[in-house]
Image (cartoon, rainbow, N blue to C red):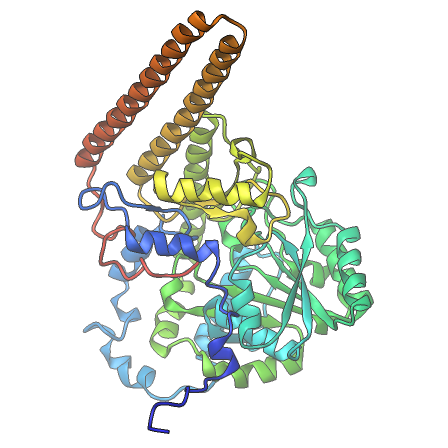
Length: 515
């Protein structure tokens, strides 16, 4: 047997599908990557509406950087700190950075709770932070309950390398997808009966993909639920500062602070990052804040696999310590998110599309159940393919979020320019209008067919010809409408050029981010 003739063996991690990328959620990304929209270079391309990224306040950050050149070691004003930042740092991170993060987390939560800088553990973005805490809490084969719909990449982040399983806890539209005690207990009891070791519960607050927040009463019941069963609660709070309308945000840390000694704090862990709240996913700032001393100690050792770069820590320590800037940024971000959310959802309402009422996040949960040919997940996938391939919009189907009901879609709204929003809305209006005309055409054909069956042969021939003419006229109207839209869109785009830092510029490093 010659060299190379034997099949090369790789690890189970390398060869399994735990990465979760063989799903419609990532297929939409691939469709965008193959044909990305650009207002002048590729006006017929796919618009990226599957990227949960906050790009509405970059101007504020850029303004601060220009006014604070000493915050960077890559400027003449800040180069004196180059050596101190470039040399080895321990796993705890810079003290100033941890203090600034703890202060910022408190500010985001209205100052109603304080955070101990000595409990700040770093990870490589929220992805690394989530995996780190799971490594600390569970063994391969163990499981965590997760209310659905939930973030599709949790399968990868939480389970691919850890070997931990996720058990969906179905939530329904009848109560706006709120998790219930009954659903939790049913999922937990079933897992126990199946011999699965449930190690904890994972929640996202604010929710991805729903864009809703969890009220204090529900949070207290969740803390009680895990406490009674001696399992862990991991609360992903990476969208905490994206709340843009009532009710105000309540962190699980507030509940822990209020419940005090009535609960076992060792069971509570918070995951945080700056990827969503400040729009800095490329900085890879992930945080685990645990009330458990052993988790903090072990997490620090594990964080060596995904530390935040010293240069990033140095810059952010200065930025987040600027109280005036932070207050201005949080207020303006909330204002701009509210404005964009209202503009987009009201535009959809004009064509009969509603969304789940939400108050946070960088997306909304769009209800297209009325557009399904059949109320099944197969019907959802057929509609999604039509939207991606024909309408050229990358929205994410609800089934990829483990939604128990077909027909829901997540739409991201904060990663694009205002002009791109208008083009996306116009495409949706055109699509819905065409669907309505198609349905009307089908009714005409059905009506004509009924007439054919109840008249004489001569009349049948005449009616059939008329029916064909009706369909021909319908096709002509649709073609005309399509051309008119494309001409209007082309004129609109030529009048509105994108800014140089636009997320859809072809060479932007953010184009290939994953969210």
